[in-house]
Image 1: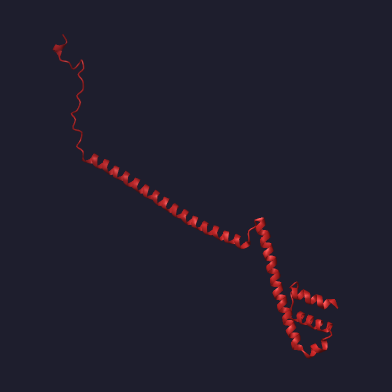
Image 2: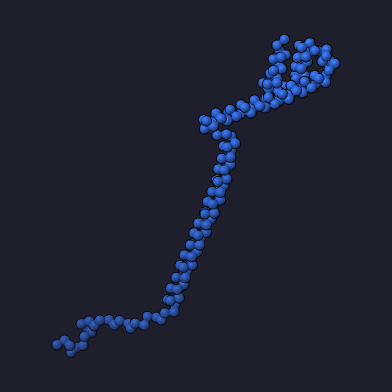
Length: 165
């Protein structure tokens, strides 16, 4: 006697997930328990309506129960300092974005540094080439050494004969 009523209560409160057939069977059992099963045969429309009401009440109450449980879990998680999955995923996305920006900036800085090194090497090579050209040109255009040749010093043998006295 209490079994159909308990099944009805479980279905309406959303404790169990109900199907159309299960709700219909529960409605018939309730009508039979109330002694209205012969009336139910004549009033199948009423049974269908009661079945729909049971289904709607079950779905609505299950959604309310789920919402209540989620709200309570969120409160406890917040008190414990736990982050929600959505928050963690948003942070992961932000970190990935920042890493991409950092890689882009780092790559740009590396290219700039490389370009500066190449420019510095080219400037040094041009400077060395210019210095080399200038010294080569200076050697080629300067007159030969115009200093008089140095005469060898006089020795005792080369001294005149009158000087020995």
